[in-house]
Length: 78
Image (cartoon, rainbow, N blue to C red; front, side, top):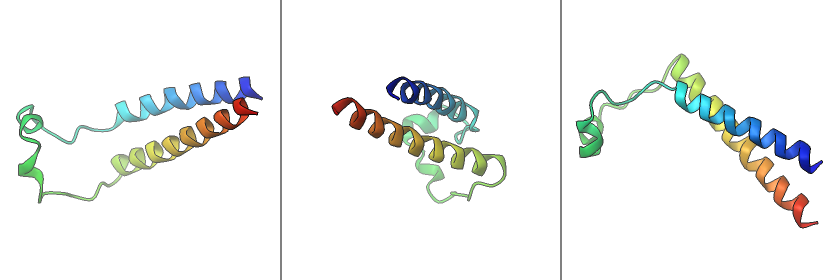
């Protein structure tokens, strides 16, 4: 069971990396990274389409990763 959970957590970790890398960039220039993006503070738009889907996929994979990590801790302590 431990090996199965470890394999699942490794697969989910790779999928999280892929889903984060596939998300479109929210900033257009490097200056906004230095200024903290204060100019975009009131220009927030609700994500739609592919961006919204990738955000949901990332959240689900993150929750799955957290659950698998908790299961691994529980299994390894008993």
